[in-house]
Amino acid sequence: MASIETMNVGKAVAARVGSNIREVRTKLSLTQSQLASPEFSISYISAIERGKIRPSLKALAILAKRLDVPLAFLLEGSPSGAAEARAVGYSPADSGPDQRIDVELLQAFVLLQQHHYQKASDLLTPIQADRITTDQAYQLFLLRGKLHLGLGDYQEAVVDLRAAVSQGEHMNDIENAERARNLLGTAYFSLYNYTLALENHMHCANALESHLINDPVFALDVYNNIASDFFRLGNLERAISYYHKALATLDGMKRDSKSFAEQYMEIGQQYKQAGKILMAREYLMRSLAIYDMRDEQRVVGLTHQRLGKALEKQNDLDGAEQEYRQAITIEEELEDDVTASLCHTSLAELLVKRGNLADAEQEAQAALASARRSDDAQTQGQALIALAQLRHNANDYTGADDLFSQALDLLDSSNAHELAGVAYSRYANVLEQRGEVQRSLTAFKKAYQHQLQGNRGETD
Image 1: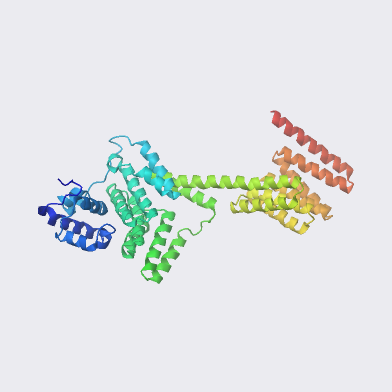
Image 2: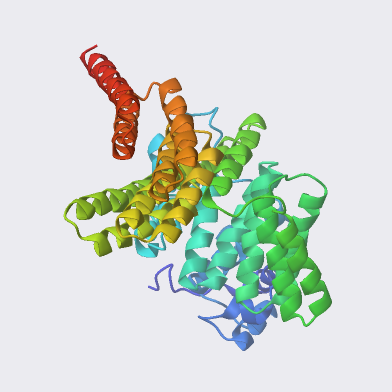
């Protein structure tokens, strides 16, 4: 006896099945070629729709999945009933959501971001949509769609992303529906169906322009996708206008990582206030990830600076200069003015040792500019000390004294006893070189007082 996997559908229902497949396919704007590939031929699908061929249940199961309808709809239901299928999953009010599923969905999301598709698939495959909450089912369909997009299985992506769109709509969640629809358009684009791609992307644009969604990052992606659709359709004027529109969504926003992190935080807060907890979490996680990355990069920059100091003590001035310059590049990219100023100061003092006073002056000025942007008194004090030393070396004693005075006032007011002690000691040495013994002694006394205060603070 033939198994249920391979037995043919009876003649009595073949005509109904063919009619149902054709109606669902046309409602979804799929061609026979898109429905057929890769398992079947166009002529096979055509024959099924005309009731000329009795497909096996295995073939029907594949077609039902591709059409995003239960197999029962093809065998005994009507297409109009399929269009009204309920959302999958259950309400969290009926039974508490499985937090393990939330964690696995989150892990899969991160893995997809990292392009670890097989690991993401291993997490997603066992999850059954009818045994999780409606919110979780939406995420499952969306993530499966993203997985198929990443793997290049675009027809499979269409099936899952249509399910995600439908799930979002049945949940009356415009945000979720349009995010899935944007990816659905991308799947159609990858299948060279630029007309359907544009139709889905324009639907997203309408939601944005009706202010149903207020998310500049999402708008950037949607408008960029529309521009690409028009480009492929040969409408260069519309493509150019939408590329400009895409860029305009982030006008006024700086492109550095810190600004993006702040923007993600702001968007996350807006979603939180609107009750969109999942979207809020996603944006807040993006913000946190960027801040973590910046912290790690800052440590890398400081490590280069500290390595430079160690090399300088070994009199490896070439190696030290290279490390300082690497540190400056990293910290300036991060726009970390405090650390950048410290690195510029280190380089300036090294260049003084090497007799390169012109470049040392330039680095010291850069250190002071960064320090003033940071409004950090200690950093400004250190930068001013470097400039003061340069003025002294140039025999501009009046200028040097003025800069030393500014630096020491800042360090005194900031209670930076260790830094102030070192600064007073350096000033005392400068004054001694000039033969100003009394002023030098006064500066040494101040250095000693700061040292005592610093030691007292450590003891306390």
